Length: 75
Image (cartoon, rainbow, N blue to C red; front, side):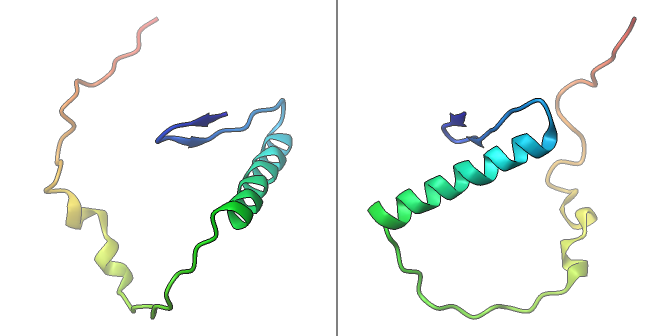
């Protein structure tokens, strides 16, 4: 199943079969694109970064609290 703006999903009765279907579907898409819509990316250099810069606390000011109410499950 492919959902526009969401991605590709594969299903089966167990995880390994589902994973295998995902690899097959992605490989099929790669082959199609290579044949019908080839692209060439310009060479670029990798940039060094510090793993500490990826700390979640650095981004907490963006949305410190969820705006939606907390879900509560009852029996």
